Image (cartoon, rainbow, N blue to C red):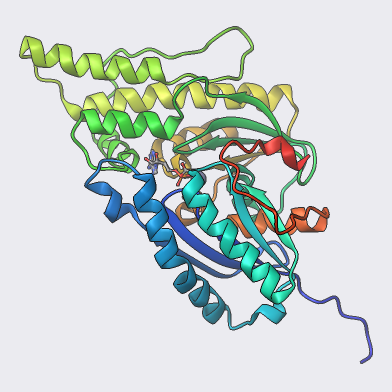
Length: 344
Ligand code: KG4
Ligand code: ZN
């Protein structure tokens, strides 16, 4: 009695950068209290990709409902919160604006600190909802918009040591899936087909210059499209399962080899997988096989629900950035070109 008890830190996260409207509440940076995601995938499917105007309209319609549900599920009110964290970029500007404006309005109305979060910092911090992070660490971020290797020497400090020069990994998956007449988003379909086929078709792997940690997937994507078209013209039948397996093998080979090389060179304690493509079964298996035989490097892979876009990851990153003292005022704007190094 009378003993000083540190109050639990409660952070609300808001994410609207692409096609999920999401609000979550996180306790002490690591514990999910509520995590609500309203996906728009069904609305975008018939267009074969995300339509920005459609995305913005959905966010406007959903954000208040999702917010109320997150609070109700958590059984708390705004007076229990320490801060509001929001994805400020990168992403679709019109989509980002809905979340940023909602966060600003709430921060103003309830007199709460506002913490801007880089979307990829969020993807990386999804891992902190699984286990404590150990530094230095390396994160392989593979999503629909990004393919990056990010080195972190400490919490809230990000160095991009490699990134894609053209298509992101998920983008390549989605475009290849489209060529094979599969619905959007194509990644999970290609992944499933790849499990049923064999990598019998020779496809390129872009290693780039010696020592580079950058990636390139547009050549591979074009090679798959050309293979399909050539076969069609010559009347040859290609097993789509084998094509999917060959494509997936090319992507995974490059991702795994570069991640392993960087992890050793930078002497990291942990490797964190992050982003929507982290849901890929083949990639998860290949990384697990590689790192289980590497002494001293722990591989962390979040559950599928934390790999795709969600707000728990934004609140998890927001918790650390809040402790670091990062704040935005009510002039905060959505920034589609935001750099992750802006947190350093
Ligand atoms: O991180 P995310 O939800 O959104 C972005 O921030 O981009 O990633 C979505 C991407 C899509 O391109 C989707 O096709 C891909 O992740 N994806 C997958 C799998 N599940 C989702 N790609 C390959 N294999 C999967 N199992
Ligand atoms: Zn994402």
